[in-house]
Amino acid sequence: MPPDVIAGRYRVEREVGRGGMGSVWLCHDERLGRQVAVKQVGGLPGESSMHLARALREARHSAALNHPNVVAIFDALEEGDHVLLVMEYVPSRTLDQVVREDGPLEPRHVAAIGADVADGLAAAHALGTVHRDVKPSNILVRTDDGRALIADFGIARTVGQEQLTRSGLVTGTPGYFAPELARGQEPSPASDVWALGVSLYTAVEGAAPYAEQANAIAMLNTIASESPPVPARAGPLTPVIEHMLEHDPDDRWTMARVAASLRELATDVAEPQPAPETAPTVVETVPEPVPEPEPVPVRAERLPDTVPSSPAPEPETAPRRRVLPVLVALALVVAVVAAGWLLTRDPSDDDRADRPGSAGAEKPSRDSSPKSSGSPSGGASDQSGGTSEEPSTTEPPTSESSAPEPPPGGADASSPAGVVTDYYGLLPEDTDAAWALLTPALQDKIGRGTFDGFWATIDDVRVEDASEVDDGRVEVTLTYDTGGRQEQETRQLDVEPAGDGYLISDDLGAVAPSE
Image (cartoon, rainbow, N blue to C red; front, side):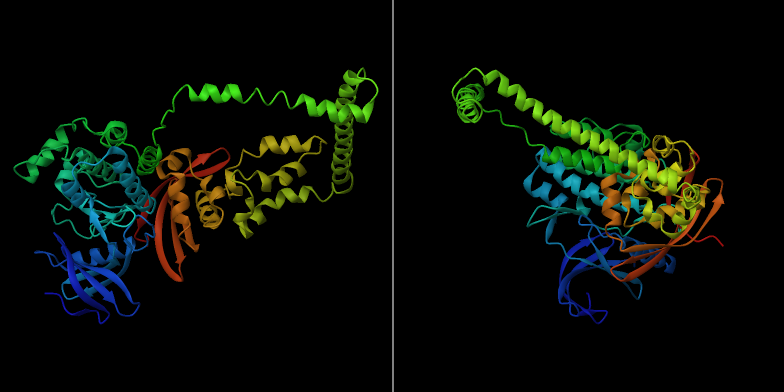
């Protein structure tokens, strides 16, 4: 039986769910006057304080996920042998309930649910967090607007963080294990993609791709050795599900790509074709009235202004009227060319002594404000510096051609640690310039929508320390500021040479700070 009041603040109203990790109660937060869901984590046989420490650590990391398609975690409490997670209360049905009560769902409906969930999971992957237990019972579909949210990051793990314990206990639901997990490999973002693919397959087909087995070991054997059957009812959803259920995790789509494809499918309403006769009729009737009124008013208005007594000047007035705008345009071109000549002549004649110093000003501008690059490629900030180094009067074209050579964003390309420092220095304000400091492969892995969505939730980020811990690998300690709350973490990023500088090629996630 739960207590009447949890932590002196959350008054228990009723039980709203029960799962393998404990009960979920609907509670009233008496301090903020809102409904919350409180879930019990821990207290399973054989668990120790190390397990509770892991649960607390993962809950706190998951609390950093501020996304409309992720059930928010407000608080994590320790009470005896349990960890209590205080979460957003979502009036909803699980996807599992929806399918059991309503039967197999229409493909575009499943695509809309999947797009919501994939957006939330892609945001988690961008933070370096793998869910590890994606399944229909952890997907909530709101009763009011149908928006879907992913819940239960209770066994989530941050990629790159050392596990506190290896008890041999299988965490997750075997029927949704990816083939690589069934073979004993570590969870990864790709294994979440597989699990979501199985969930969508189940929703559209009404049954899971793999039939129930006698035990978990038999199920894992089947998943590891057999490809899932092609769905029969998925229609336009079939190609996306097949890409999500690729046996080789390297061939599987990223979660960001899945989200984009599902969203496109969900919003792609089949165009109803009107009766073919209607369109030609409209096209034919429109030109008929248009040509007749046009010539009449033109002649009626223009002829009296030129030569009212004779229609002969008619062919002459038209050319004259065409010549006039041409002459005006030529005059404008001449004026612009003259002004351009004066503008380019002044700095070359009068300020040449000052301009060589601007090339050296590039480094101070990077140190003082990395956000001043002006464009994702850094062209706006580097153009004056490139121009000042050339004595020729044809310097602007030279600066334009040389601008793309350094890494984009006006970053400090002199070292891997420098480009990582500049990358975070651009955020969260200048996401365009920061995005340009990622390799195309990492951009494809993250997805621009997920990238912008995550950084929109961060008020400020500060680099406390950045150093190269291995060849091309940088360890950076960051302090995030979100809603007045600060959180510090240490991450590792891979950096690779690009042109004369470096680009960030991979984010390995949060790690314990190196001593």
